[in-house]
Length: 158
Image (cartoon, rainbow, N blue to C red):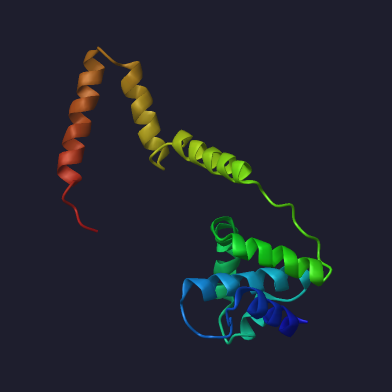
């Protein structure tokens, strides 16, 4: 059945996914193959899927992780996926409209903007302390010490 998937992808996208190169069209089509095989044969391991192309399982992981991006920006991939799923009896996924895709991207961007720009809790604590002591001598002392700490450590190369 995997050969049937390869043939359908070749027929629909006119891309030979067995070719060993890094062209975008081939990478996206190969990701489609990985996605379909993983969806239709849930018990197949990533390494066994990768061995169809003499690749490492990490390539399959990477392709599966990026597949949603490929199908979002390449409508041919989405159409081919749905066609192959129909032909092979898989469950066809509901297509997202352009408006839904835009809303999802907007939501993801808003989520990114609401996250702090730093990852250390200490920075948040220092900001809170500076806000709480604003206009006091303690605020000036904290600011002076932080500036000294920064100037001492800014040129350290690890």
